[in-house]
Length: 277
Image 1 (tube, helix red, strand yellow):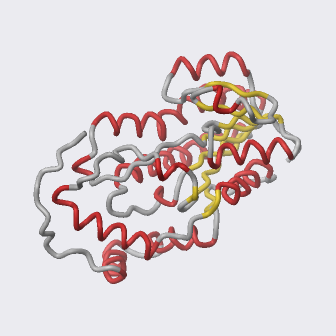
Image 2 (cartoon, rainbow, N blue to C red):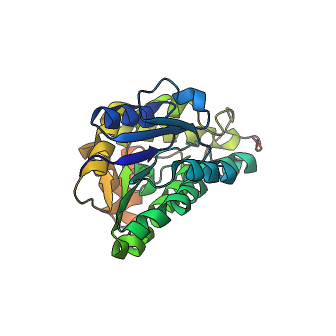
């Protein structure tokens, strides 16, 4: 693919920042965005803008200012680690506003020009959690399942117009992402204390090794530049294996396998009511 005009969300740190640097060095016209324009002011790219994907007016302003782009990379995201019961409404709204409604707003804003000219690409950065759910990741995984479903439907809808959609699926990444989780101050999981300890041990046993932001960014660069892209791209063989651990088994077989890796507590002894935020 020749050099393209690329809009990337979530460039203040991590994968988004590494991606902006790499694409700019390769000659692409990169527009790096973050909720605060100051967070991307130091990036050596074609343009830097403040863009809050959770704010419809912010998205509209960005679309009016930027006009058409060749590639949209929906990278901005939030994480959450909490028992399903204990996640508060405010955190859930923030999660879905960022991980699902945000990408949809960007698609609405920039897809029409792609469709009208007959070319373009949308790259959605999802997660292994988009196809595999672990304990305490239910809400986060649900948001990524939703993004994957939207991406798959959209891929079929826009293909006749010459627009491609691809979903990139990282496993764990060594960035600030894991240290800025929603519901991170739910430090006492109450009755789920032993379940949380089991979930942590299970994650260490079955999760793919963490990649660097730069390693994941290299995969997204390939997704931007490839002549054709598949529906999904795991960012490493280990991430692909983690997905296959779930997708390659039926439900009963998967549960038997998972519980065989690290047996769950039969009857947690922890009590109390942790409540919600």
